[in-house]
Length: 125
Image (cartoon, rainbow, N blue to C red; front, side, top):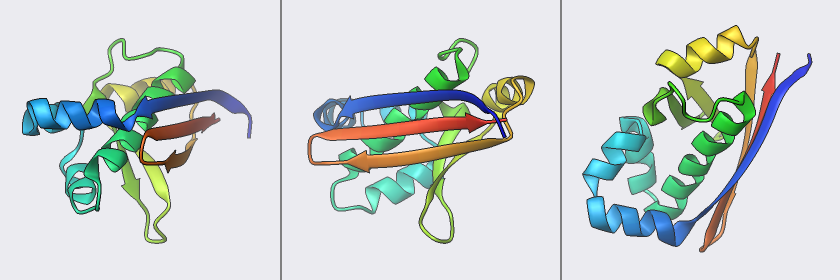
């Protein structure tokens, strides 16, 4: 299958921690799906996990080549499959644009440290 797009993004964990402290649920509800919030909040340092998922959204938008024009943050989510592997789920406009661009599969890799979260997305056609 051909590669339709590739994107990478890095997010400072402290930036997301600040957003969580300043805006709390308002920030979470604007960006993340409820399942993501539940997962992240169950972790030792939720900010690291929110940062990785934020980076995944940015990386996906870069891979798609559209940025967030016409796509909502909540149109993209990161879930874990039964083996614990992170997967991108698409909704609404993001799903429609991906389909129009011939995206058949989204590959995702996440990593984070105490200070930095990185996501790589590969779109396969």
